[in-house]
Length: 109
Image (cartoon, rainbow, N blue to C red; front, side, top):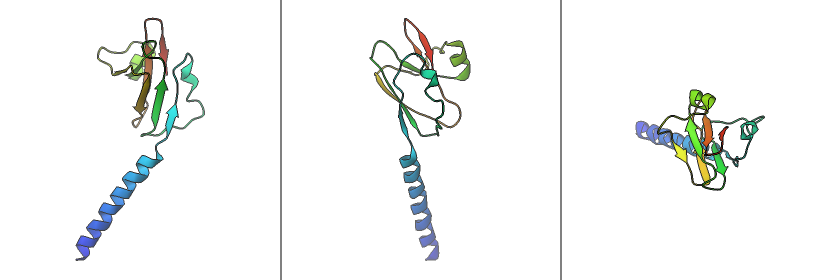
C-alpha cells in the first residue's frame, strides 16, 4: 500500500501549493486618476496579484489591451472593458496592459 500513501501525499502537496499560491497574491488599490501610469514605480507585481480600479462609474472605465493597443491608445473592437467603478483585474504571467477610454480622455496604465 505504499503506492496509495504516495498518491495521498502527492495530492496533499499539490493542494497545499495551490493554497500557498492563492494566499500569496496581493491586492493593490490603484484608483483611477490622471497619471496613474506612475502607480507601479517601485512595486513588484506577480501573476495572481489583483489590481483594483476604483472610480465613479460613467466617468471612466478600464480596458484590458495589448502592448500595441496601449501604445496607440486605441483598444481593438471587442476588447474586455470594465465599467463597474470597482473593477478587479487579476494579473497574468508576463506584461499586462490596461487603459481607460472615455469621451474625454484616454489614460494609459
